[in-house]
Image (cartoon, rainbow, N blue to C red; front, side):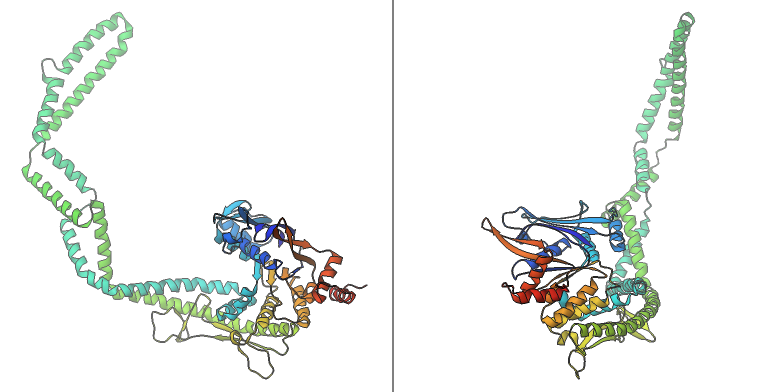
Amino acid sequence: MLRSLLIKNYALIEEISVEFSSGLTIITGETGAGKSILVDALGLLLGERASTEMIRSGAEKAIVEGLFVVKMNVRVADILRSNENDVTDEIIVRREVTNKGQSRCFINDSPVNVSMLKEIGDALVDLHGQHEHQSLLHPETHIDFLDDFGGYEKELETYRVSYRQLAELTSRKRELQEQEDQLKAKKSLFEFQIKEIDAVNPQAGEEEHLEAELKILENTEKLNELTGGIHQILYESESSTRDSLVKARKMLDQLAEIDATFADAVHELKSAEVIVDEISKQVQNYASRIEFNPDRLEVIRERLGALTMLKKKYGGTLDVLIAYRQKIGDEFKFAENFEGEIAKLEKEIESFRNDCGTKAGILTQRRKENSKKLEKEIIASLAELGIQKAKFETTINQRRVENNTNALAVKIGSSLYEATSDGVDHVEFFLSTNVGEDAKSLVKVASGGEVSRIMLALKSALAQSDKTPLLIFDEIDTGVSGRIGQSVGLSLKKLSKHHQVIAITHLPQIAGLADTHFAVEKTEANKKTSTRLRLLENEERIKEVAKLLSGENITEAGLKSAKELMGIKD
C-alpha cells in the first residue's frame, strides 16, 4: 500500500506531503483545482514519460516520492532481487525531473532505470484514468482480463515456454529459406575457394616455424663463421678464455692457501671453466650440423609465398585464413545438405506444434470454463451499478491456418491454428444493455459511462485474484448519475476490503462512503497559484459532501442529506 506521498514543484503544486491509510480514500475538489495533477504526478512516479513542462515555474526540478509498504509482495521482491537490490518491508520510490530535461529514478536512494521503475510501479499500483478505461475498447486486451480472472498462470507459462521454442525454430526455418538462393549462388564460389586453400593446406603456427628455418638457411655462412670464432676465442687459441681461466684459478689456489677468504673465488672460477667448456661444446655441436641446403631453401620460400598469396586474398593473417576456411566449409556443407537441414527443422517444428497445441487446448478449455463464471459476476456487478438486465458474453474463437508451413501455428488434431504467446484464442467481450437486443461487440456499443462501470465490474470480479495492492480510479463516475453513483461507491467500498483504493470523484454518493477524505484546493499567494491537498476531519467531510450535493451555498437540507449519505445519525 501507499503510506505517504511527497510532491514538490510539480505543475501548480509547490509542495504536498500527505499520509495515506488503507481502505477507501476519496479525493474531491472543484474543477480546475488540480485533481488531475495528482494523478499525473503519480503516473510520473510509476514510470510514465517525463517532461520539463511539468516543472513548476521558477523551480529547478520537480520531485515525486512515495513510501510503499511491500511486505509479503512477492512480485516486488522478485524484481528487487533480479536487479540486485535489497528486499525490505518498505521501499521509497522517487522520481526527479530537472529543467534541463534530465530524469532520474531512485528506489531506496539507489539509482535505477525507468524500465525497472515502471516494472515496480506495475506491481504496486493499478491506475485507472479515462485512458485506462478505454483499454476495454481494444479487443486485444480482453484476453488479459479473462486470464487474470481465471488464475491459470502456471498453465499459461508452461505453454509459453514451448511457444518460445516453436517461434525460434519457425523463425530459423524462414531465415534459411530466404537464404536458399543466396547459398546456392555462393556454393560454386565456396567450392573453388575451398580447393584453392586446401591445395596449400595451411596449418596453424607453421608460418613462424618456416620463417625461423628460412632465416637459418639464408645465414649458414655467417653461422659457420660465428660458431668457429666463438670456439677459437673460448677454447682453441693460444690465449683462449679457458686457458686464461685455468691460470687465474691456479693463482687463486695459492692465494687461498695463504688467506682462506679467497676460497669462494676459487670455486667461482672453477664454475666459470665448466661454463666455458659447455658453451664450447654447444657451439661445436651446432657447427657440425650446419649444412647449406638450397633445395630446402627453395621449398620454404615457395611455401611462404603460397601462404602470403592466400593471406592477401582471404584474410591478412594465417589464423584469419584458417578461420575463413572453416566458415566456408561449414556453409558449403550446409548448402550441400540444405534439404536435409530444412527437413530436420521441420521435424522439430512439428514436434513443438503438437506440444504447443496440446497446451493451448488446455488453455482454451480453462478459458471457456472461466468465461461463464466471469460473465455471471460481470452481469451481477453491472446490475448493482445500474445496468439492469445486461447481457455480457465472452466469445472465444480460433483462426485456422491453411497450407502455410512457415506460419507460426500450433497443431490441434489435424488442423493448424494461428498462435500467439497467449495461445490460439481470440477473446472478445460482447454487451447488450437493452432488453430484447442481442449482445454486440463491446467496442461498438458501450458508451463512456458504461465503459467505466464495466471496468469497475471487472475489477470487482478480479478483486481477490488481483495481486496489485493499490487501485487508483480517476473519472470512474464519468457519465454516471447520482442514483448509480451510490452503487459505484458501494462497489469501490467493496473493493477496498481487498485493496487500498484511491478514487477521485465529483459525486457525493461516492464521496460519502470514504474511510479517508481529502480535498484538493487552489490558493493564490505572492501572485502565484498553488494546489494543495487537505485531509478533512468529520465536520469538514460533512460540509464537503454537502457542497457536492448543493453547491457552494450549503443548506441545512444539504447537510442533512450529506449525513444520510455518510451513514451519520444526528
